Each structure stands twice: as C-alpha cells, then as structure tokens.
Image (cartoon, rainbow, N blue to C red):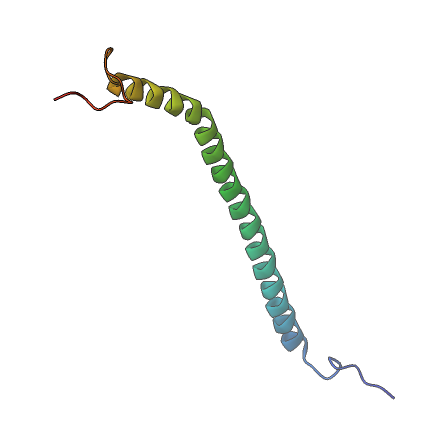
Length: 85
C-alpha cells in the first residue's frame, strides 16, 4: 500500500509549503513580467534613437556641404598648380 507523501503532515505544515510554493511562483511570474516590460521600453528607446538619427542625417549632410562650400577657394585659384611666388 502506497502512502501519499503529505498524508502524515499536519494541515499547517501543508499550508506553509503551499504558501512558499505560491511565493516562488509569484516571484518567477513577476520577474518574467518585469523583464518583458523592460525589454519593450528598451526597444522603444532604441527605435526612437534610430528614427532620430535617420531624420537628422540629411540635415547634417546639407549643413556640412554648406560649411565646406564656404571654405572653398575663391575664384581665380587653380588647385592643380601651386601659387606663383
């Protein structure tokens, strides 16, 4: 005859074990949910940064072209020949 493992336990001991098991399960579910939420927030930040860079890149290129064109040599200067001394 097989005897169930909890058959000899008192009711209070069984409740304590059940409470402990419930606490462990709750902790696992909470940590999983927290990890999922943090992952979603982090991915949102990454996508926001990527979108920000994608929108600003053309403006940066235009401003760099303007800056370089302002630094360009004046008319009458030939880059191929060194200036006469």
